[in-house]
Every structure is written in C-alpha cells, then in structure tokens.
Image (cartoon, rainbow, N blue to C red; front, top):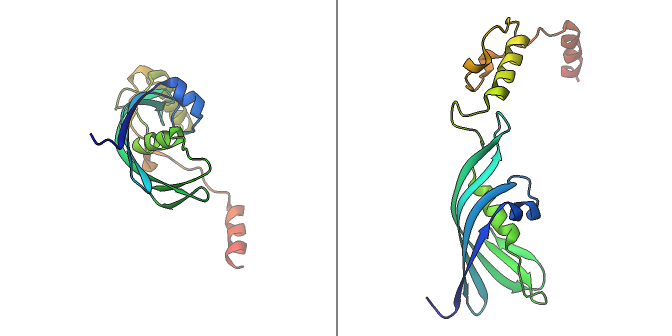
Length: 180
C-alpha cells in the first residue's frame, strides 16, 4: 500500500441504524472497509460494504433479510462551503477540515438494496397472508371457507381485483370537468 493511503474498518450493527435514524433500514450487520487516498488537492474515499440488512417485507411486514455487497467511490475536496461538483465529488469547507462518513455509508447501503422488499415465495408470515387473503375473498364476495394455512402468498394481479360499480352521478361530474 502507498504511504498516503489509510484503511479503516467499521462493523455496523443495529445500534448504527438506530443512531442514524434513516427511513429505509433500521437493522443490519455489515462490515465496511474504507480506503482513503490522499492527494495534494483531494481525498479519494473507496468504500467496500458487505453484510445483511433487515427491512419490513412489503407483503407481510415481517423482517426480510437482504444481502448487501457494494463498492462506492467519493472524492472529497476542500472549498469555501459545502457542496458537490458531481455525482461523486463532495466539497468540504476548509475551516471545518473534516467529513462525517456515517450518513454516506447509510446512503450507500440504502441504495444497494432492491426496491422491492419481499420474502421468497411461501416464506411470508402465514397468519398475515391468511388474513390478507381472507379479506380479499370477503371483499370479492367469496364465502371464505378455505383454510388459512393453505393460502399461498402469490402476488395479487389487477385482473383478480374487482371494482365496485361507479355511481352514475360521478359520470355527470366528470363531464363538467372535461368541458372546462
């Protein structure tokens, strides 16, 4: 390794996510390797993040375990005030002379997880999925006699949902709005 580079290792656990208070992730266990290379005009930060996060399942709301493995780079320069010159360049005021990387690490983690947070098929909470399916059967006019344990947690498509008939008075109001 070069003399102008330093490596830092962080182990993140649930306490990190509690303290950061971010909206996406509240639990996890990750290892962060941060390599900082110093040049005369900037610092290059290379992050390697690996581990697991736990987020609520979009279907049953129980925690689902998601792997995280991401590499991210940032360039930190000194300037007059906070700012950014691009996607991966951050400007830190010279009078402060330091940067807290905790929020940056959190953002890298949040960006590394998929948009859809769901268990593998059949792994969602049987009780929650049973209640959801019972509610859907009841609202569609089914008798609801099917056993909740036999319920699958398949994704419900638009073709399975039925809409109640529209009140004809709404059609008249739509005509007024369309004519304006």
